View (cartoon, rainbow, N blue to C red):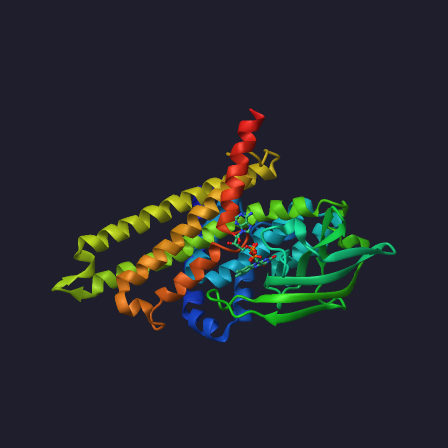
Length: 388
Ligand SMILES: Cc1cc2nc3c(=O)[nH]c(=O)nc-3n(C[C@H](O)[C@H](O)[C@H](O)COP(=O)(O)OP(=O)(O)OC[C@H]3O[C@@H](n4cnc5c(N)ncnc54)[C@H](O)[C@@H]3O)c2cc1C
């Protein structure tokens, strides 16, 4: 458990890093479509690649509330960088901590914490997104180990990753998670997507052609548990998406406020118009509510780690879906209104807010679309009613 004072210090550290090291580079990353390697080196130096890894494996073991607090600051700096960190920390590291064997933790966690390896999460496929149970990538037994064949789509960090968790079908009704070193023969990075927003983020297709793995690659060593592992990782991931959305939205709101204080029309500052003030109040209200939901869901991440049930309206699964849904919609709304406050300038690439709207939209889609979030919330509510 991180104390409130420590959390604030870490928030300030992340804010200083975002202001001094991320923001000045965002435009060039966006143009180049890639984040500089040096940014990952600095993240590693600050310990931000080991946020969710226990100290025994070289991490900083932040509680989940501190993790989302730092993630919000990184997203305030740049959504693409924050997404990359969130997949590494929330999606993959947390999963190995929770479900890896002791040998897998010792093998991978120190490398992830130090930044020696960046992690990726390969679940989606060309024909399987919202319905992960329909994936077609296969893992067949070969001797003691496995051989993977299939295609994974939209793998964030996929090109620079040094560890990829690949989900594959091991039987008609069984899915498993495999820890794959991308240097393994048969692993090939394919098409790099051109995305609406988060343009510096690596979103790639991965081809798996007879990728031979040892028996130790099966996450947790337990067969048939992969879909459960994926859904658990997505719960944690969605809390991270909520934090990313709040950071992106806050950046848009701040830009809009600064502009409204400067720009004059009809002899007044935009900030003096009641219509502008009402927009600002509504932006702040929505983002405050979203942050509170992200922190509430973060509490549930730690509770779930201590064995508290994830199910029902108050469990992690529902809270994570509520937080992700609310925060992503808040971010998109806020960024849209921020463009409106900038007027014509907001529509121009020279000004910062159009990028933030493009970035915010992504948070409504990845790690489960908002339609799926509504489905998850309703399912958890009905489960509680049925079980009563
Ligand atoms: C920037 C970005 C990064 C990503 N990174 C990763 C990654 O690192 N790893 C990874 O595995 N995946 C990643 N993804 C994939 C992402 O998780 C999927 O795009 C997402 O889960 C939706 O799947 P889909 O795109 O196949 O849409 P589909 O599942 O085809 O859905 C299309 C539409 O139908 C709706 N829909 C589907 N089912 C239902 C239903 N039951 N009820 C109501 N509506 C429904 C959806 O909400 C959506 O509006 C990434 C995507 C993006 C955009």
